[in-house]
Length: 215
Image 1 (cartoon, rainbow, N blue to C red):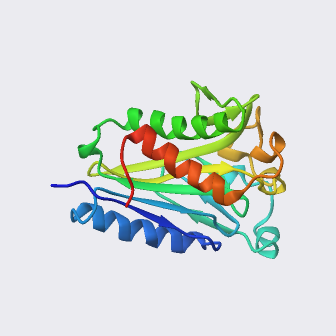
Image 2: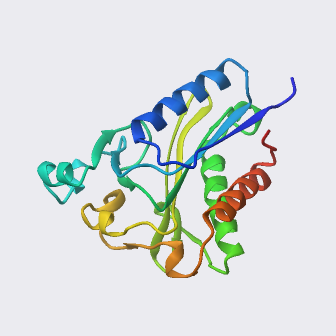
């Protein structure tokens, strides 16, 4: 069977629950062999998501305060703790059949980190890994968070990449439950970032690392 990889790219802000629906639809399409994988690229409206590792204890503001700021709190099936998604942060959800690539979740996560590391390199920024914490780091500050799920060897959830996000949102939580390290954004190192160009670089970096081609 010829492998088909579909790209879904959204320019407007997508509510998080709508993003979950997009993932569910993509999962069904991959499970039913319509596609070998679907790559969803978007930005979300402000939301805190809590993974299987918990995280409500890492919310530092009251429910009333969060409501006043129009921030939803959603429990999700990915690994990891609490994180923030919002404008100025690119999120991508690869829904891939790993039986066609490599049945290895650690390999998959390493590759996701590599995608961001290569994109950062294009901007002269050195992205690094921390053995104890997943994601991509610059100068001991997290620039990209990662949380995945794997069901029947089909992947879900994915990667967030801080570009010019309002970092105050992160001060209202302990991101990923981590208190000893900070958060950073690409704009802290690079000026005049063209989001369209950056999105294209993420797509091409993903194709390179995973050796696939999107339709």
